[in-house]
Length: 154
Image 1: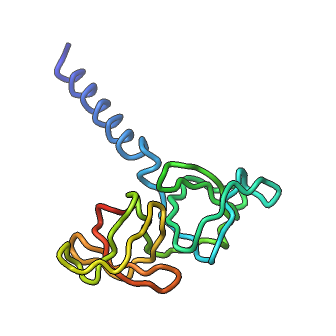
Image 2: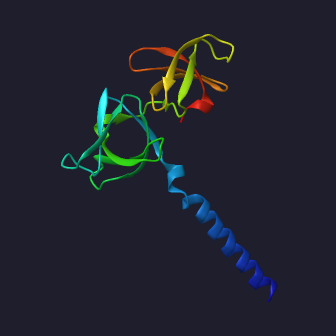
Image 3: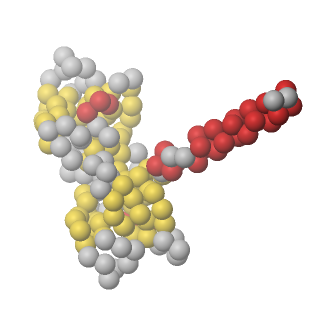
């Protein structure tokens, strides 16, 4: 093979690699939103006529995967990988997290030596107040505030 042919082949391989990296993992491009109302129905399809599969609490984070043609309904994935639809009026751009472990210590200060204020079960959503290194100050919809280690949330 000539040097010219090898060069063209390398260019094609690089181009294909770049395209795969750019578009290959659509989930990596997902927009993170959160439930902005006290409770929202997660549905089996993009419309009120579809079954409500479950209700999500305020601040539940959702990764948007797609939208219906009207843009009124969002197809999303939650922290467990479950997919469903939600009306866009029920979510917003809120920095939030959800506990992913069975029992998580919520502390008074951002340290494992700090007093435990309360414990949260798996699947409890919180609004992020601020971030400090490996710690996140969180607030529950009921007003409780504390600190949690970033490794305990999604």
